Image 1: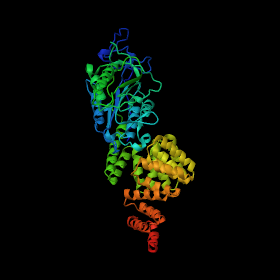
Image 2 (image 1 turned 120 degrees about the vertical axis):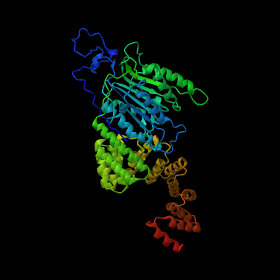
Image 3 (image 1 turned 45 degrees about the vertical axis):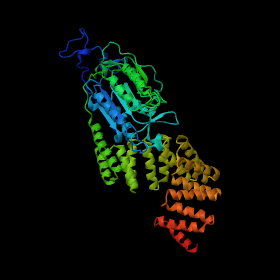
Image 4 (image 1 turned 180 degrees about the horizontal axis):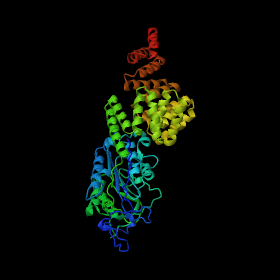
Length: 569
């Protein structure tokens, strides 16, 4: 799910380079050297003053996701992956972006996991390959969700709607990952997603880039540009924005100024989305922190495209095994998946995601020692990964190393206090420690982030029962059922809290609904028998106990007690 990509730029030796004719200048004062032309254009030194200088090399990542692991994320118009492919084709076109194909990384659908995206924008690709005088372009097309913290979160292939803050990528985190890792001083981020205009350049200017003028098209300014398909409160319709943008960027054989291309894109996108076919108009946005001449994406790089270094190639090879393993897990072919994970790790021993996912499989197979060793290696490679630490905490708990488990979970909470899995696991530890106040606090933090989560209200109800607050526990249980009427856990918990409150009739009703939801659930029949017996309905209670015996696991310790009880009823 992640990619490491390192890159060594060509050494041009002695500081001399063959300059394209368009850049050549009159240098009669320079000493003559056979076969060498000198230039006065910033001489490609990134330390020279001024924002305007040629682009040394060009790098890009194109991401498009139309199909998600989350089955509820089914699009009526699944075109986001085709947008990424189209943008990649534009970038590599000789009359378009003029990027070398080996410098463009395209991730679509199952390959575009959260970690693969962050790796490609981080040290495994752009962070290692792009130099200060290079140009970096990142294109993202996916679903997006507005959230309670005022941001917008982009969906990765493996995102979960029940844990958006833990599995999706916020626009701000996307930009921070790029800024923290990418050394290039020219970065363009293009996002096609609903609510994408929520991006904030965090102190960057709002002005559009200056027009390129009549100077050399190889010379451009520097800075950070973010182009989004819509404003913060708008939907992004189909691929209208990206289609218009690509068409505008292809004008003048790809040598059109970005500001000019954007104006045409915005105008056309607004016109096409203002009709009756759409419920609201879509207005693209451009935010920049840019100095100097306007960017021309199609400007030719002045250095020949470098080859990908061996360590990056090794990571890509390992990644191919890793993706294959993920597909096999989805198909239920666990043994074959293990073999592919192992090949990924053999190819690149530092592949943290392969280490962690293989550890997850061993944990499920009740091999915690193997799982713990793999998680330790994964965390060593990526110490700030909250998910790694959360899963490692579970393995440590399996091994009985409770103090270490708590420590890992607390570290995960510090790394991502919005991850629902982390918050829920932390609340569980508080409950085990009889710290009901701590549990309620953490669960309420989670509910503030995920106000429509039935299981969080279910857990809050349990914590409130433990603290003796039965009235609030009933309300929380009722809220859980209202949020998810088909939740067996919520129905059973509601019945139990009503029993504790003394409302026998409503408790019986809740348990009866639970048995209808899950006719084969032994626990539901067992609990319903209790309320029926207390209500005086002994016949009904006996019937439920017989159903319990039919559905219960052979090793259920309650079976013997029920059999004895039936003999005396």
